[in-house]
Image (cartoon, rainbow, N blue to C red; front, side, top):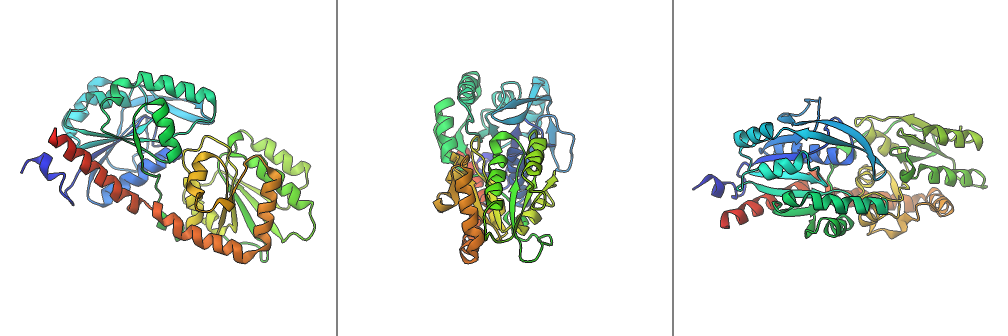
Length: 389
């Protein structure tokens, strides 16, 4: 039996290259996806390599840092992209490793990931995962132009995946390939088993976790909190704001102006180790992002503890995750509606706990062990199809 035939068999070991133009030193959503999938694949016995942009960390085995990178703003985020990957270095790596499959995170860059795809042997299966939704018309136009630049590598992609239905539609519109949905993943047990921080007695905790940038909508939450503070007979609550960003000073000024300092706490940056503990401490987690979200992994992380009811802004990525519970979605810039939803949950502990229990069950579907098995089957199916050609 040939090597190509053996690797399509169940339980056979695959050599997998996870391709990311950005740096693994960052803790953004795509990086977390790559590391979660990679570590699970490695635990399952596969030979996993990371073909990435400029990365100093060596916390994972087989990191191949292939370019120098720089940072720019795009789609409401700071993006880290490669300046150039030397084709000689890429070609030698591909020849030496002989990957069975390359799993590319896209939209990718012409100067690195496109080179890797084009230089890969014809026998290597190419799978891609599309990760974004637009935050503006400019992003749509830019991604359409990028799709034109990436035509040489898009032709080599055997299977295009997208992390949500909205992302699949945007990919088809701008890159022109049919995409099947393969959702984002997270380590369910890491969040489910977290120990909460101590909390004041008889006081419920409302949590915001995210970057303090306009599209994440923290200002909407604080405006809702201001409304609640002005009401009578509101159960005791406190608000924890986890994260840093350009709006930090403005948000703190808002809190001071409206005399909310006794109720609102800013933690600043929170490590990945402490993140699950904050989610486990919350009674209500609020994510008011109004756009640019292709999925909603933060929603699932918050749900996994089984302690928190989750309220989510009505952007397409979050809406796709929250579809089974539309009552937990709100218009992301409507602070009055958000205040009403928070107030309802503060008053109705049984309902809040019911939503928390639902989230605990529902979020387990997105555990890396569940989605990872589906990914491996996709890899094997693509390899088998190439063998038939």
